[in-house]
Image 1 (cartoon, rainbow, N blue to C red):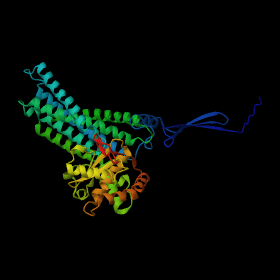
Image 2: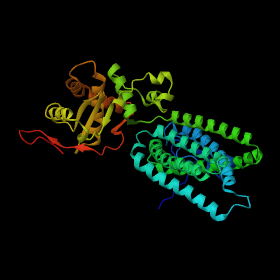
Image 3: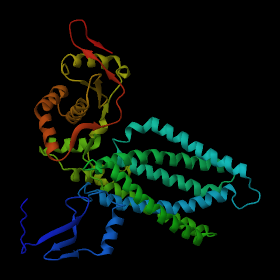
Image 4: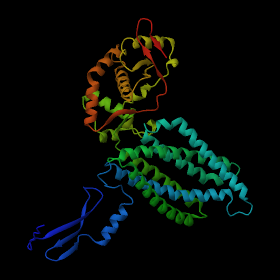
Length: 438
C-alpha cells in the first residue's frame, strides 16, 4: 500500500448538534495543522439550556409542528396554571366541608362521601362518552372551551360545598359530574389537536412534551396555590375574589388559545364558510382566514359581526332515518331516488326548510363530503329557484371538482368531512319492479 502524505494540508472537523437539519448549531471545531486543536463554539450554559429545552418542546421544533403550536401552548399553559392555583382553594374548601380537622368527623363518613363523589364522576364520564363521543372530533374548538367551562363549574361546586352542609354530598357529586365531562372532552380534543400539530408523524413526541409542559405548570400552580391558600386562610372575601379573578383569566386564556388554532380539517361549519365564499366569488379562503370567521362560542354569545354570518350548515341534517319521514316525504324520496340521485350514494329531501341527507349503505367518506356540499348548495338556492334539485345538481356537476381542487391547493384536507357519526343509512335501487328501501 502506498501512503501519500502532504505536510502542508490541514484537516478541519466540525461538530454540530441538533435534532433537525434546520436547527443544527456548531458546537466545536477540531483542526489538525500541524498539531491537534479543539475550539468550542458554544458555552456550557448554552448546551445545558438546549438540553433542558428539549424536554419541553418537540424534536425539530419549530419546523416539526404547525405555526399555531407555540401560541396555543403558551395560552394553554397559562390557563392550566390558573386551574392548579384554584384547585388548592377548592380542595381546601372541600376538605373543610368533609370535616378534616374536626373531632366530630369520622373516617368512614369522609371515605363514603369521597367514594360517592368519585363514583358519580366515573358514571358521568361513561354517559358523556356514549352521547357525545363521536361529536368531539368534528367540533374540537367548541368542545375544548366547553371542557374547561365544565371544569370551572366543578371547582365552583367544591368551593361552595361548605355553605350547604345538609346538601354537601349532592353539591360535590354535581361538581364531580361536571369535571367528568371535562376529562372526556379535554382528552379527546387534545388527541385531535395533537394530530393537527404533527407535521412529521411526531404525534407521540408532541404528546410526551405536552405532558412535560403540563407537569411543570402543575408544580408551579400547586406551589403558588399553596401560598395563596395560606395567605387567604380565614378570609372568605379574599378567597372568593382570588377564585373569581383566576376563573375570569382562565376563561380568557382558553378563548385566546382556541382562537390561535388554524385547523385544516373540514367540519360542517368550516365547509359552510368556504362554500359560501366560493359560490359568491369563485375563490377559496385560506385556513387562517376561516379560523377568524369560525364560531367558537354559542351563537347567543358571539359578536354582532359573527351573528351576521349565514349559518346555512345548521339547515343540513346528515344521516336522517328513513322511517322518520312522513308518507308524502317518502313518496318524494322514492321519486328522487329514481331520477336525480340514480348514480349518487345519497338522497336529499327538503322538509320545513331543512335539507335531510339520507346516505347509502355503501357510501364512503368522499360521498359524505359531497352530500353535505350538495345539501348546502340546495339550502342556498332555496327561495331563489323552484327547481332546487335540478339547479343544485347542475352546480355539483359543474363546480364540485373545481371546488375540491382549490381546497387542496389552499392547504385543506379533503379526504373526509368531520361530522357526528352517521348510524342510519339506506339502500335503494331503480328498476321496473325492484325499487326498494332497506
